[in-house]
Image (cartoon, rainbow, N blue to C red; front, side, top):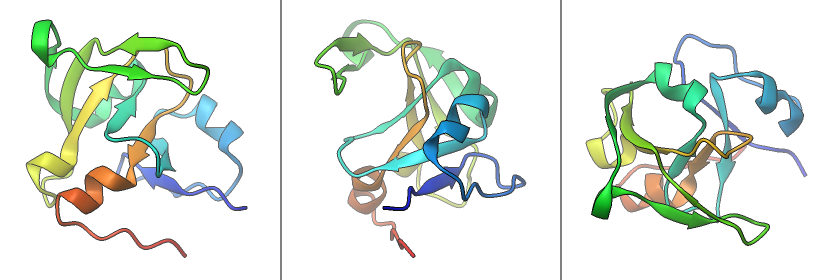
Length: 116
């Protein structure tokens, strides 16, 4: 099965290799059909705007594949002004090994996801 990648930086070259490349780059993310939101590592914050620390009710909690619960440290918007604000919302999780972009979040906000 081929992995799907999303470029956080409109100027970067798309990845076509396996997901191990994601651990060495800050400008790409794996597409994730199971995530209900976009979740990135702190190193991806250079590709976001309107960044703020999360606390209280805004702090997002997710369960990882291993069953651990992790909490967001920040929230921001992808630097993609041509997309809706809701589609651009990204939570930052220091514990993540790779950046994840949610197909669900794109679809729920009226965007189309084409897998080729």
